[in-house]
Image 1: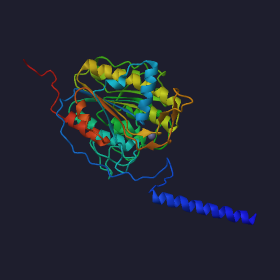
Image 2: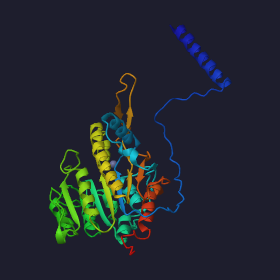
Image 3: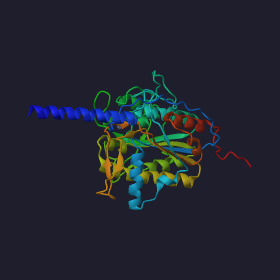
Image 4: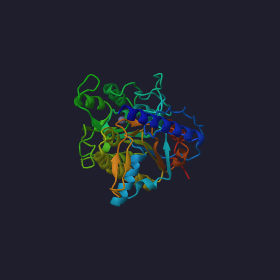
Length: 398
Ligand SMILES: [Zn+2]
């Protein structure tokens, strides 16, 4: 037995030496296949700002779908084809992407990315409407109000959630809902539709108190979303729902109905408007790797987008920007040959990823987004467009 072991060891050593020699002679490198390699993200390339020569859009609608990447979009396109739905995604004149990194690095949270898009300045995690040093940043809604735009926010999440907050507030922490609500009530905002969380903690007040704060500025609508008439028709309005009450396409009202009501209210006014629509569904579902909820949520997003595009095409002077703040989940639609053509949804993580995200635009000013490749450049372009000389509001005398 001992001798056999010796011979076997000797053979292995000789074979290994022979293999190494062959690899050396033929200059072959062996690599171990691995899907998990570490890498260092490169330094961000600073983009050269070019002035956009587009005409000023009368109205601007920004639709931000939290957590939506190209994987989610691919899924929407694949399921759309099978369900024979209108191809809303193909109606955009400009289809591009942006890198959603924060000032801190390749990853971002909603606070940092929404702030970059709302202000034109990259910032750190947890920073809402403030730069990395904590200085307040002017947001596109504040610029729009100075230019006599009406402004509105529709969200299927909390009204004080990071994305809407970045267009109104200047604060460090998303969880300080009371401060954000107070800043919303002190803002120039004309419309806010969304949910409230009923926690009653120090920084998240109970619904009654939250509504009391909002009523300092807004007239509260009932569930049927009946708009104020007569002398009250110009009052800023709010529609508030409980947690998860409006997130579902089957709920009444839903994101589609809320967006429709917002467009009716804002377009009835003499002034132009800037409207932010936010859907939180892709992020919430992707953090849970909940594939069914993603598929369900995509329907609500597509139908709301179809409504927005229908409005903008009929109105003719409305810019629509569709984008996301970051990708969540590393979602991929895959299949093996055994189950093909059936597809499976696979997930890489329950966190945010560094994937680039869709950036689509349509209407006057859309071409200005063709060269945008960083989230903060969206804010720069929006600021440029809103700051152009006032939109011609029937002032022609002859
Ligand atoms: Zn998230």
